[in-house]
Amino acid sequence: MLDNQVALRVSGSRLVNGAGEPVRLRGVGLGGWMNMENFITGYPANETTMRAAVRDVLGEERYELFFERLLTSFFGEEDADLLAAVGANCVRIPVNYRRFESDERPMEIVQDGFRHLDRVIDLLASRGIYSVIDLHALPGSQNQHWHSDNPTHIAALWRHRGFQDRVVNLWEAIATHYRDNPWVAGYNPVNEPGDDTGKVIGPFYDRLVKAIRGADPSHVLFLDGNTYSTDFSVFRELYPNTVFVCHDYALAGFAHGGPYPGYTRGEWCDRAQLESEFERRTRFQRETGTPLWVGEFGPVYTGDPAVDAQRYQILTDQLEIYDEHEAGWSLWTYKDVGLQGLVYADSDGAYLRRFGDFIAKKGRLGADRWGSTMEEAADVLAPLYDLMEREFPNWNPYPWGARYQIDDLIRHVLIAQALVPEYAELFRGLGDEDLIALADSFALRNCARREPLLDLLTRNLHA
Image (cartoon, rainbow, N blue to C red; front, side, top):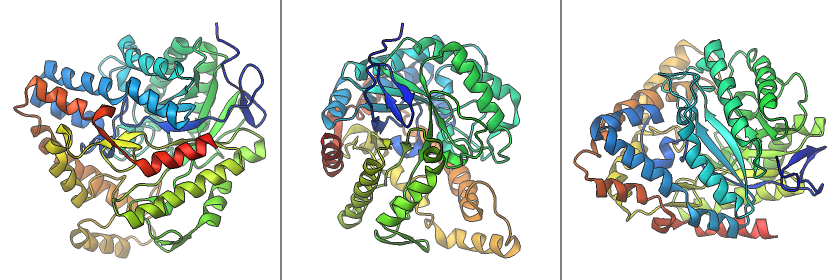
């Protein structure tokens, strides 16, 4: 049975424990672990395309050796200790459906997928840290981008009932597995949905909520709005014991962000604008009296001390705003190769010695959507931008418009997929010990720490 003293539930505009004490969940997202992302661990394109290419080079046995070791090294006892020391009380854990089900055998749950997830949830629980299980990549892809392990720009989940059936089946299995675990704060069933019609997601949420509640009537649901957790008009009712999750990335904190305060692509950004945008994104929650929780936010860092000081100021201002509104939050992301992480693989470690030049090439080409300034190879792409604007001035594709769509198709699909064989070839000729060393580059003992970020979070969480 669920431990009611620890287990969380929604009470009005707050989460509370069994004693009725308010609990504001604040912590980090564990991106790049059970759902890999290109900018986090340095590969190109989407996870499944990359894995297939690496498997072809290494063979099945050594492929399994590397990726199993990576799962173990990426998060362990020392990582949990660090987050506890910082003061985090929650980790949002993104997972890929392919850890629990294969496209070759749909609807059959792979029980071994729970092994590492159980391990990390238990590590966090032993330190008093809650977990939110976030299905980050769904069958058919729930949005148009790499982070749903999407090799195209089509979110096919919303077009095919069969994909939706698989999501329901998977969540019934996950909810059944964790229904008695009080340190699982709840379930985040669909990360950043992108239903371009806006017509399918509402009825699908109705169905999914009913299925999860049938397997587990007690855990909190964390539901993202449509269009990457920004549009809450799709919700036709307020589900009980539910948090409606917003994501709150600041435009000035993107890779192409301008000075702060200052203009980014013609839009002014300062603290007042950050607060205004947060209030706009959380209007639904405040009007319905439901808890405020920011599932993702956080700037990217450049290595330029002056620019990064501005990025830390953005984060400081956002945290102050969340404190003033008593909003919980989950900073993106805990660990990577240097763009956003609290900690990151050291440049002198085995992984970046092997892949550093390749990652630099990705950067030069703007192959990763997250981290691209949208100006790489501008001499080549500028005529295409001009052509599309001239010939199709009213073209405004979902979700972010023409310029983003062109970049997605050219940089983040075409160029990124062309880079996949080059990345995979860098594994050729490596022995077992070499593969273990690559994976262990992501162990905390081999990582650098972004001390200003750690200090900033520690001050906020211990205040």
